[in-house]
Length: 320
Image (tube, helix red, strand yellow):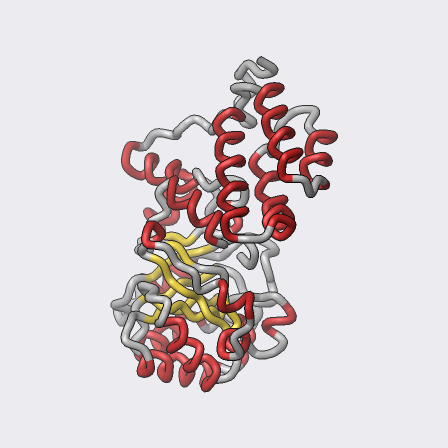
């Protein structure tokens, strides 16, 4: 979720009822060296709470120092990322690379827990590859270090994001009588019905949603409404999406310089209006302009052209 879960996106996710959020993951090496981008990611706001700062790294001393430094930003938890599968991260032994050195993972986690005075959580995967799905045993060892909760992504590092997430082992961890801490499931939850199925089938304590939030931060409200009522909310209209896109853009500009804000907003803007008919030319303009005023004009054109259209409702009138 690098360049995704920045303050502007967290703002709109909180609007739609996200119960708990995390910062973009922060390099421990970058943080202890006062790297500008790493330090900037420590910016937290009261309306975001509860919120966790997520750290990654491969060196125990650096991770401990970074965790202590992160506590100065007053997060609610410190989250250790042992799950990122990206090659440049894992190849250095960080992120999911830790799954190839379990003793180091356990030692690092224990050292950080001893060094800070707030809860520490861990996110990881089922294992390194198909032949090393060690999560059931690993979960017990991580619990023994004193972590407050464990998030499990239902794929191995070798899978990256390919294929379907396997929740059976997540359920096995949750239903292990030795496990007492909350178990959070992650992977392929893309809507209310899927979320409810995972709660009902595997008994997990919470669900973490990542990629399904791209251009769809209202997914949190949809899931909560469905869990509470059993009813599916109608999709946002284009008019509502345009309002949100403009708000999101403004929030991005509050936290970043103009060009950086625009470049990082592109993936959101494209996803907000995904599924509109005859949208190719407008989408190209939206994703190539570096002029904030032009982008706002394009969004207003989208509003005017597609009106109350809902991308997944073929019976809806559009072009109002």
